[in-house]
Image 1 (tube, rainbow, N blue to C red):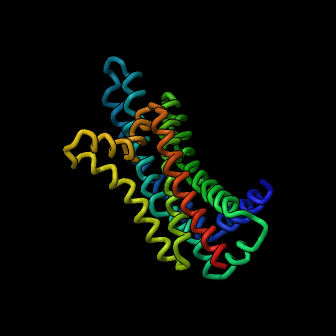
Image 2: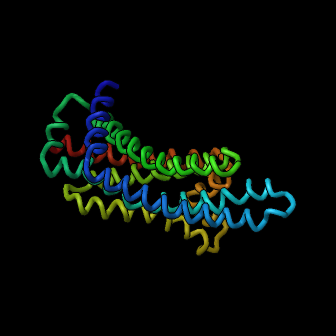
Image 3: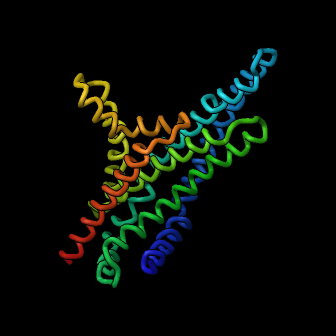
Length: 259
Protein backbone atom coordinates (compact mmCIF):
# COMPACT_ATOMS: atom_id res chain seq x y z
CA UNK A 1 0.00 0.00 0.00
CA UNK A 2 2.85 2.38 0.75
CA UNK A 3 4.24 2.02 -2.79
CA UNK A 4 0.79 2.59 -4.27
CA UNK A 5 0.20 5.70 -2.17
CA UNK A 6 3.64 7.09 -3.02
CA UNK A 7 3.05 6.61 -6.74
CA UNK A 8 -0.51 7.94 -6.44
CA UNK A 9 0.70 11.09 -4.71
CA UNK A 10 3.44 11.64 -7.30
CA UNK A 11 1.12 11.18 -10.28
CA UNK A 12 -1.71 13.19 -8.74
CA UNK A 13 0.54 16.15 -8.02
CA UNK A 14 1.98 15.92 -11.52
CA UNK A 15 -1.48 16.04 -13.11
CA UNK A 16 -3.14 18.43 -10.68
CA UNK A 17 -0.43 21.07 -10.95
CA UNK A 18 0.00 20.76 -14.70
CA UNK A 19 -1.19 23.61 -16.97
CA UNK A 20 -3.22 21.07 -18.96
CA UNK A 21 -5.41 20.26 -15.95
CA UNK A 22 -6.18 23.93 -15.31
CA UNK A 23 -7.03 24.47 -18.97
CA UNK A 24 -9.38 21.48 -18.86
CA UNK A 25 -10.90 22.58 -15.53
CA UNK A 26 -11.43 26.10 -16.88
CA UNK A 27 -13.08 24.85 -20.07
CA UNK A 28 -15.22 22.43 -18.07
CA UNK A 29 -16.37 25.23 -15.75
CA UNK A 30 -17.18 27.59 -18.60
CA UNK A 31 -19.00 25.04 -20.77
CA UNK A 32 -20.98 23.60 -17.86
CA UNK A 33 -21.80 27.12 -16.71
CA UNK A 34 -23.22 28.07 -20.10
CA UNK A 35 -25.40 24.96 -20.50
CA UNK A 36 -26.49 25.10 -16.86
CA UNK A 37 -27.57 28.74 -17.18
CA UNK A 38 -29.57 28.00 -20.34
CA UNK A 39 -31.21 24.95 -18.72
CA UNK A 40 -32.08 26.87 -15.55
CA UNK A 41 -33.69 29.66 -17.59
CA UNK A 42 -35.71 27.12 -19.57
CA UNK A 43 -36.81 25.40 -16.40
CA UNK A 44 -37.72 28.71 -14.71
CA UNK A 45 -39.87 29.56 -17.73
CA UNK A 46 -41.62 26.20 -17.49
CA UNK A 47 -42.31 26.76 -13.79
CA UNK A 48 -43.60 30.26 -14.51
CA UNK A 49 -45.95 28.99 -17.21
CA UNK A 50 -47.26 26.28 -14.88
CA UNK A 51 -47.62 28.59 -11.88
CA UNK A 52 -51.39 28.22 -11.70
CA UNK A 53 -51.45 24.51 -12.62
CA UNK A 54 -52.36 21.77 -10.15
CA UNK A 55 -49.53 19.67 -8.67
CA UNK A 56 -46.84 22.27 -9.24
CA UNK A 57 -44.54 20.69 -6.67
CA UNK A 58 -44.58 17.27 -8.31
CA UNK A 59 -44.03 18.86 -11.74
CA UNK A 60 -40.96 20.66 -10.45
CA UNK A 61 -39.62 17.49 -8.82
CA UNK A 62 -40.08 15.55 -12.05
CA UNK A 63 -38.87 18.05 -14.64
CA UNK A 64 -35.77 19.59 -13.09
CA UNK A 65 -33.98 16.28 -13.42
CA UNK A 66 -34.62 16.11 -17.17
CA UNK A 67 -34.63 19.79 -18.09
CA UNK A 68 -31.60 20.89 -16.07
CA UNK A 69 -29.50 18.01 -14.80
CA UNK A 70 -29.48 15.65 -17.78
CA UNK A 71 -28.20 18.22 -20.33
CA UNK A 72 -25.69 19.30 -17.67
CA UNK A 73 -24.38 15.76 -17.15
CA UNK A 74 -24.54 14.91 -20.86
CA UNK A 75 -22.08 17.72 -21.51
CA UNK A 76 -19.91 16.44 -18.65
CA UNK A 77 -19.89 13.04 -20.35
CA UNK A 78 -18.75 14.61 -23.63
CA UNK A 79 -16.02 16.55 -21.82
CA UNK A 80 -14.76 13.44 -20.02
CA UNK A 81 -14.82 11.41 -23.22
CA UNK A 82 -12.20 13.70 -24.79
CA UNK A 83 -10.42 15.18 -21.79
CA UNK A 84 -9.66 11.97 -19.88
CA UNK A 85 -7.45 10.66 -22.73
CA UNK A 86 -5.66 14.03 -22.69
CA UNK A 87 -4.90 13.59 -19.00
CA UNK A 88 -4.11 9.88 -19.30
CA UNK A 89 -1.83 10.05 -22.34
CA UNK A 90 1.15 11.07 -20.23
CA UNK A 91 0.65 8.42 -17.53
CA UNK A 92 2.71 5.77 -19.29
CA UNK A 93 3.40 7.02 -22.83
CA UNK A 94 5.30 10.08 -21.70
CA UNK A 95 7.31 8.07 -19.19
CA UNK A 96 8.25 5.65 -21.96
CA UNK A 97 9.25 8.56 -24.18
CA UNK A 98 11.38 10.14 -21.44
CA UNK A 99 12.84 6.76 -20.44
CA UNK A 100 11.72 7.26 -16.83
CA UNK A 101 9.44 4.25 -17.21
CA UNK A 102 12.50 1.96 -17.26
CA UNK A 103 13.53 3.34 -13.87
CA UNK A 104 10.04 2.67 -12.54
CA UNK A 105 10.16 -0.91 -13.79
CA UNK A 106 13.47 -1.56 -12.03
CA UNK A 107 12.24 -0.08 -8.73
CA UNK A 108 10.87 -2.34 -5.95
CA UNK A 109 7.25 -1.96 -7.01
CA UNK A 110 5.08 -4.53 -8.76
CA UNK A 111 3.28 -3.95 -12.05
CA UNK A 112 -0.05 -4.22 -10.23
CA UNK A 113 0.99 -1.44 -7.84
CA UNK A 114 2.13 0.71 -10.77
CA UNK A 115 -1.22 0.36 -12.52
CA UNK A 116 -3.31 0.86 -9.37
CA UNK A 117 -1.33 3.93 -8.30
CA UNK A 118 -1.56 5.57 -11.72
CA UNK A 119 -5.22 4.67 -12.17
CA UNK A 120 -6.24 6.06 -8.78
CA UNK A 121 -4.43 9.32 -9.50
CA UNK A 122 -6.32 9.68 -12.79
CA UNK A 123 -9.57 8.75 -11.05
CA UNK A 124 -8.98 11.46 -8.42
CA UNK A 125 -8.64 14.07 -11.17
CA UNK A 126 -11.83 12.79 -12.84
CA UNK A 127 -13.57 13.10 -9.48
CA UNK A 128 -12.40 16.71 -9.30
CA UNK A 129 -13.95 17.45 -12.71
CA UNK A 130 -17.17 15.71 -11.65
CA UNK A 131 -17.33 17.86 -8.52
CA UNK A 132 -17.40 20.95 -10.74
CA UNK A 133 -20.68 19.64 -12.15
CA UNK A 134 -21.91 18.95 -8.61
CA UNK A 135 -21.29 22.58 -7.59
CA UNK A 136 -23.83 23.70 -10.17
CA UNK A 137 -26.34 21.26 -8.69
CA UNK A 138 -25.78 22.88 -5.31
CA UNK A 139 -26.54 26.23 -6.93
CA UNK A 140 -29.79 24.81 -8.33
CA UNK A 141 -30.72 23.67 -4.82
CA UNK A 142 -30.67 27.31 -3.69
CA UNK A 143 -33.31 28.15 -6.29
CA UNK A 144 -35.52 25.06 -6.51
CA UNK A 145 -36.63 22.22 -4.27
CA UNK A 146 -35.87 18.76 -5.63
CA UNK A 147 -35.04 15.25 -4.44
CA UNK A 148 -31.31 14.67 -4.13
CA UNK A 149 -31.34 10.90 -4.72
CA UNK A 150 -31.99 10.89 -8.52
CA UNK A 151 -29.54 13.74 -9.08
CA UNK A 152 -26.77 12.09 -7.05
CA UNK A 153 -27.36 8.72 -8.74
CA UNK A 154 -27.10 10.37 -12.16
CA UNK A 155 -23.88 12.13 -11.11
CA UNK A 156 -22.55 8.84 -9.72
CA UNK A 157 -23.32 7.23 -13.05
CA UNK A 158 -21.31 9.90 -14.85
CA UNK A 159 -18.40 9.37 -12.46
CA UNK A 160 -18.52 5.63 -13.17
CA UNK A 161 -18.47 6.40 -16.89
CA UNK A 162 -15.44 8.60 -16.21
CA UNK A 163 -13.85 5.67 -14.37
CA UNK A 164 -14.40 3.50 -17.46
CA UNK A 165 -12.87 6.21 -19.67
CA UNK A 166 -9.90 6.33 -17.27
CA UNK A 167 -9.28 2.57 -17.55
CA UNK A 168 -9.60 2.64 -21.35
CA UNK A 169 -7.39 5.71 -21.72
CA UNK A 170 -4.70 4.37 -19.39
CA UNK A 171 -4.62 1.15 -21.43
CA UNK A 172 -4.23 3.24 -24.60
CA UNK A 173 -1.34 5.10 -22.93
CA UNK A 174 0.40 1.80 -22.16
CA UNK A 175 0.38 0.70 -25.80
CA UNK A 176 2.70 3.37 -27.21
CA UNK A 177 5.33 5.91 -26.26
CA UNK A 178 3.79 8.53 -28.55
CA UNK A 179 1.48 10.67 -26.44
CA UNK A 180 -0.59 11.92 -29.37
CA UNK A 181 -1.24 8.39 -30.57
CA UNK A 182 -2.22 7.45 -27.00
CA UNK A 183 -4.59 10.42 -26.94
CA UNK A 184 -6.36 9.53 -30.18
CA UNK A 185 -6.50 5.79 -29.37
CA UNK A 186 -8.03 6.67 -26.01
CA UNK A 187 -10.73 8.74 -27.71
CA UNK A 188 -11.44 5.88 -30.13
CA UNK A 189 -11.78 3.45 -27.21
CA UNK A 190 -14.13 5.82 -25.36
CA UNK A 191 -16.35 6.35 -28.39
CA UNK A 192 -16.33 2.63 -29.16
CA UNK A 193 -17.92 1.66 -25.84
CA UNK A 194 -20.92 3.80 -26.81
CA UNK A 195 -21.09 2.46 -30.37
CA UNK A 196 -20.96 -1.13 -29.11
CA UNK A 197 -24.25 -0.77 -27.27
CA UNK A 198 -25.91 0.56 -30.42
CA UNK A 199 -25.64 -2.83 -32.08
CA UNK A 200 -28.56 -3.97 -29.90
CA UNK A 201 -30.84 -1.97 -32.20
CA UNK A 202 -29.34 -3.49 -35.35
CA UNK A 203 -29.43 -7.22 -34.60
CA UNK A 204 -32.60 -9.27 -34.97
CA UNK A 205 -31.61 -12.17 -32.75
CA UNK A 206 -33.19 -11.91 -29.31
CA UNK A 207 -30.14 -13.55 -27.73
CA UNK A 208 -27.65 -11.21 -29.39
CA UNK A 209 -29.84 -8.23 -28.54
CA UNK A 210 -29.79 -9.27 -24.87
CA UNK A 211 -26.00 -9.67 -25.01
CA UNK A 212 -25.47 -6.20 -26.50
CA UNK A 213 -27.88 -4.73 -23.96
CA UNK A 214 -25.80 -6.21 -21.14
CA UNK A 215 -22.55 -4.77 -22.51
CA UNK A 216 -24.10 -1.42 -23.41
CA UNK A 217 -22.62 1.47 -21.44
CA UNK A 218 -25.60 3.63 -22.34
CA UNK A 219 -28.06 1.02 -21.09
CA UNK A 220 -26.48 0.80 -17.63
CA UNK A 221 -25.98 4.54 -17.38
CA UNK A 222 -29.62 5.12 -18.32
CA UNK A 223 -30.73 3.16 -15.25
CA UNK A 224 -28.69 5.40 -12.97
CA UNK A 225 -29.90 8.51 -14.77
CA UNK A 226 -33.49 7.40 -14.13
CA UNK A 227 -32.67 7.00 -10.43
CA UNK A 228 -32.46 3.20 -10.37
CA UNK A 229 -29.38 1.44 -8.98
CA UNK A 230 -29.09 -2.09 -10.37
CA UNK A 231 -26.58 -4.76 -9.40
CA UNK A 232 -25.88 -5.76 -13.01
CA UNK A 233 -24.98 -2.16 -13.78
CA UNK A 234 -22.47 -2.01 -10.92
CA UNK A 235 -21.03 -5.36 -12.02
CA UNK A 236 -20.72 -4.09 -15.61
CA UNK A 237 -18.80 -0.95 -14.65
CA UNK A 238 -16.55 -2.86 -12.25
CA UNK A 239 -15.87 -5.57 -14.86
CA UNK A 240 -14.89 -3.14 -17.62
CA UNK A 241 -12.63 -1.19 -15.25
CA UNK A 242 -10.99 -4.38 -13.97
CA UNK A 243 -10.54 -5.79 -17.49
CA UNK A 244 -8.69 -2.79 -18.89
CA UNK A 245 -6.65 -2.25 -15.73
CA UNK A 246 -5.67 -5.91 -15.98
CA UNK A 247 -4.73 -5.49 -19.65
CA UNK A 248 -2.63 -2.46 -18.73
CA UNK A 249 -0.91 -4.48 -16.01
CA UNK A 250 -0.10 -7.18 -18.57
CA UNK A 251 1.46 -4.59 -20.88
CA UNK A 252 3.50 -3.15 -18.01
CA UNK A 253 4.61 -6.59 -16.89
CA UNK A 254 5.67 -7.54 -20.43
CA UNK A 255 7.71 -4.33 -20.62
CA UNK A 256 9.39 -5.29 -17.34
CA UNK A 257 10.38 -8.68 -18.76
CA UNK A 258 11.69 -7.11 -21.96
CA UNK A 259 13.78 -4.64 -20.01
